Amino acid sequence: MPVPRKERSAPPSRALEDYLEQIHNLIEAKGYARVVDIAQNLGISQASVTNMIQKLDAEGYLVYERYRGVTLTDDGRRVGKAIAKRHDILERLLTSFGIDQETVHQDVEGMEHHISKSTLKVLTLILEELEGNSELLKRLKKKME
Image 1 (cartoon, helix red, strand yellow):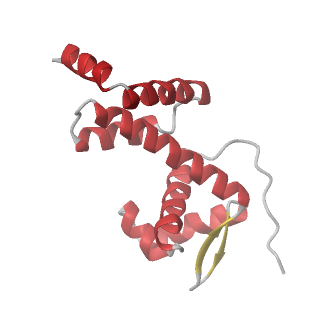
Image 2 (cartoon, rainbow, N blue to C red):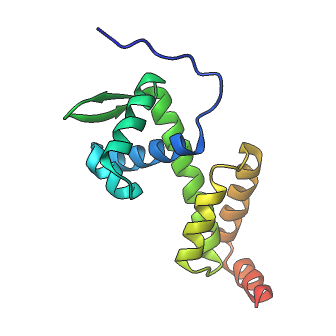
């Protein structure tokens, strides 16, 4: 018998987004996501992951079958994909300016949950222009020195 889903009144929290991003990335890379893999990627205990997975299941973002793993619902896929896209755009933009990987990682983790759709659209356009115009990128990097 299916578990009744809780009505969502707000978008997912930062923590929920982190889980959905990890699950999305694992499924994209491996074809599946298990609690042990999620825990390892997030650097937390399997018990903590199981608790959050059960919450995400109750909220309708995924389906969790004990000992079998996790599958995303359409809502879960949509959120996971959107977070992964935000992460990718921010990471590519910052990396293109030669910022070290540790700083990029820390900054992206902070920014990806707080950026609006309109700002992401602007940053995506800027990134596309920079990736297509190496001279412009060189000039901007030079100004940073």
